[in-house]
Every structure is written in structure tokens, then in C-alpha cells.
Image 1 (cartoon, helix red, strand yellow):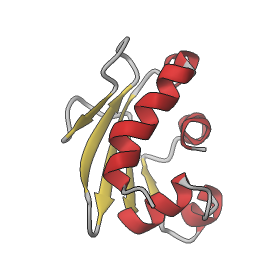
Image 2 (cartoon, helix red, strand yellow):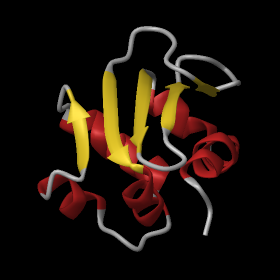
Image 3 (cartoon, rainbow, N blue to C red):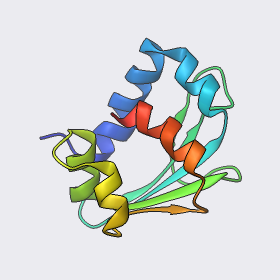
Image 4 (tube, rainbow, N blue to C red):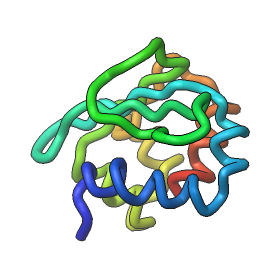
Length: 109
């Protein structure tokens, strides 16, 4: 099982490299606030040409996503449905921007 850190720092940049149009589509700064064991804060900056993911909170985010590391891994490995997690309050978006959340879903799933 990968950790939230591995998914954020390795998997997501690989997915963007495979489909660069995904980053162009998102075109925003997003903070990931991962709680619990292996938690931390990461910044996804899709306004740049590369170096999209960095550790820590940098820049002004268009959205902040909060999720426990356990649930984040489950969502990223398709063991948990992101919409269900959001409805159950396990996955939080602030502010809730449905369009941006859907674009992110394409990147995560």
C-alpha cells in the first residue's frame, strides 16, 4: 500500500506527466492537508509547466483539500469512492468548487 506522501510526491506528478493537459485543465494552486499518520501539507501548482507538487503550503490556493492519510490512500487506490467520502465528510473541499473538484477527480482517479 502506498502512503499519502508517495501518492502526492510520486504518483500525481507521474499522472500529470502522462497527461499534461490535466494540469492545464485544472490551472490552479491546490493545497492538500493530509491528517493522521504520514500526514502533512502539500501544494499542487497546476499553473506551472513542471514541478507541480511540493511539500508544504506555498502560494494562494484556489482550493484546500483536507483528508486523513488513510482515506486519501483508499480514494487514490480506488478502494473508496471520492463522492461518497465527500458526502460522509471524510474528504473536504474549501471552498467547494464543484468544477475544480471534478477536474481533480480525473487526476486522482
